[in-house]
Image 1 (cartoon, rainbow, N blue to C red):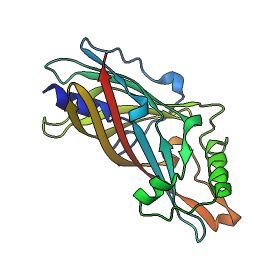
Image 2: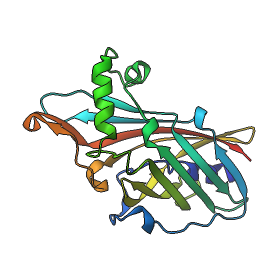
Image 3: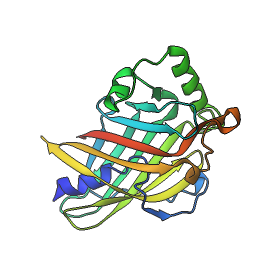
Image 4: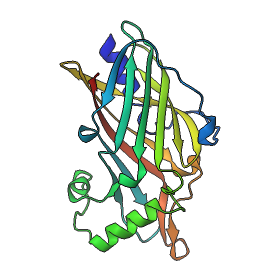
Length: 223
């Protein structure tokens, strides 16, 4: 059914459900060309879509942080009556926000964070030691394949982050209302899989866990 294929596709949004298919990494220029099939084109509603990235402390000091915002854009094509689908999404790194009070409450965290701490966390996030927003302004998510039975599909996604590309399986759930699509999911990735060394300071006393939790919601409208 079309809504099922759509759902699978969309969710390739950003990252790894602990089922890495291809540990190979490489520069963004090596991402294979994925030609869209004939089918219904959907455009992501950026303002209505959202991503939350939760990072946890590993050392004796530090805080859990929630990063995200309405930063997802791109297109999705779903072929009618088949499991063929295609998507090309992007996350604008420089637009990512940090520790909004409601996001922290959603994760059952203390929402009383100082603006100084928030600004410092965001500066570290965008620096050349982590996401390197100046050199790599976008995180890319591409897919042209889905696998699994009709009642549980997975998107086979190519994710390019700070110049490293990973192929992963991302399970998704999808809802369709008046031809609009909503895809939601959660998964985990390791920063080290993308060549990122988790933030550490004070000789490792303040250190961020390598693992990140990612929640996302993508809403798309037919074009």
